[in-house]
Image 1 (spheres, rainbow, N blue to C red):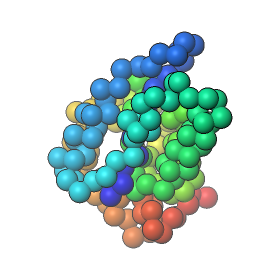
Image 2 (cartoon, rainbow, N blue to C red):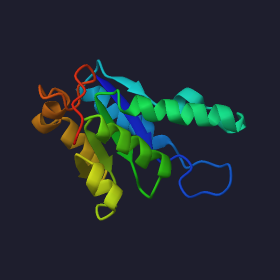
Image 3 (cartoon, rainbow, N blue to C red):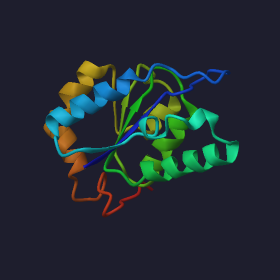
Image 4 (cartoon, helix red, strand yellow):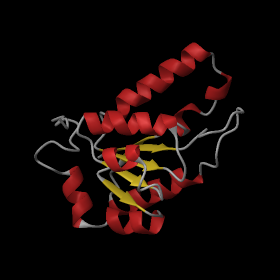
Length: 155
């Protein structure tokens, strides 16, 4: 199982700073406890020096990870507040039939309720959900939703 870790990095910041990224380890730990074989695609961890890169290289990296979001088995999005990059990754996953699990209080936000397969309020609820048969059904669906081999786009 390949898990795309999406979530706020810069958010609405106007400087070159980033938000605390500790949630990524917490999500990884939760999923790994239930699915030890899980592999993770983490744009933050894989590109720590990205803020010093040229705009062209940053653009290529962003677009590459958007495509990768649609190739994973599940996308988990951490959204305590809006994130333009995360919403684009969510859209691509949704478009390609990949289940989108959001951890967010923004249940009334159109991008969240339109693209998320399931929205959970916090990491505790996410942990319970990952251990549930519903989560297993999402990532093992024979219809192709969540299967990177099959595709199964939403129409």
